[in-house]
Length: 137
Image 1 (cartoon, rainbow, N blue to C red):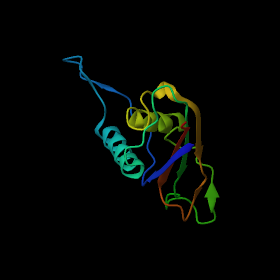
Image 2 (cartoon, rainbow, N blue to C red; image 1 turned 90 degrees about the horizontal axis):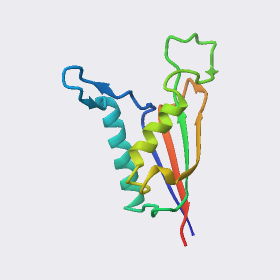
Image 3 (cartoon, one colour; image 1 turned 135 degrees about the horizontal axis):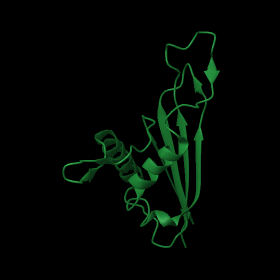
């Protein structure tokens, strides 16, 4: 039986670089990244009701993003490709790291990953849509 969990979060964000404290050598995740990861975890937990792919089960992840255009763009531009930050790979890193241990035991289980950034347009609301699926026996 195929299991599918679909969630949406009201932002588009990539994973921020790990920061270093020079004096102590300590590393930390930027606050915005940690908050985004927590929101993704909470959305998944709420929608899945504790459903998680067991260790060793292949998982497919599909990520799509949608964003509106900034008001500074000329009115004649109705739509444009989303070739701006965050990069698609950083969006994927954020989602995969957030769902590690929540949607699957280890992110090595992710065998198929798609990330699509829809074109920016005048009416789109900022959103990241995530679909996680796997086969259960």
